[in-house]
Length: 175
Ligand SMILES: [Zn+2]
Image (cartoon, rainbow, N blue to C red; front, side, top):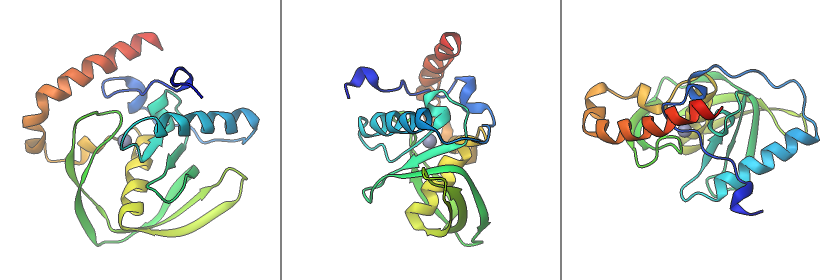
């Protein structure tokens, strides 16, 4: 697959990232091809460990994660329960290039989702896997990690955020 076949990443500032995504009702061949193209897009970017469908312009409840342990596809994902215990770690996002900030999230989450074969999976995720799941699930509800950060932390990043927003706003016109 050439880079031209990859999706354009939707940036902060584009309205697509702020919508609540729709549930997926059918896993057909087109859908599988879409997921493959999403994965190719993610793997083409350095440090790309997770990608949600809205980040490639599609408001559907789907995201993919691979932090070196193989690709996992999460369809209609949800959190059943979250640990009261939280941790604070640095996060980044492909829709907010060069921006990182510390975000507080539950250390472990019990989750439910469908895989590409249509099986229901229920499992407990911890540490990085739990954090990645929570970050990506937020995308399906129009939430970005900077929304979960204290405004004071974003002050020194405001210049960069403005620049990304300009790119994101231009993407609104293309869609
Ligand atoms: Zn993200």
